[in-house]
Image (cartoon, rainbow, N blue to C red; front, side):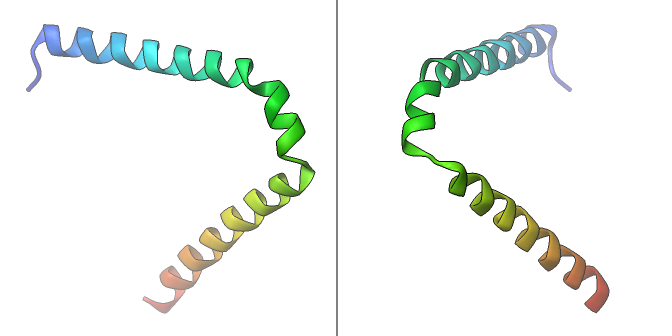
Length: 62
């Protein structure tokens, strides 16, 4: 389905993208600690929990 060149490019792209994302986050870590207090973590957990509840309700209803 994909040629060897396309697979190699995709692999290199994924490795480079993940590496740059990790580098960028590490570089901005100090700013994240200043601007995003512990409340952001609670909001993230609440969002994930809400999505999980909606998925479970959808499965139960169908």
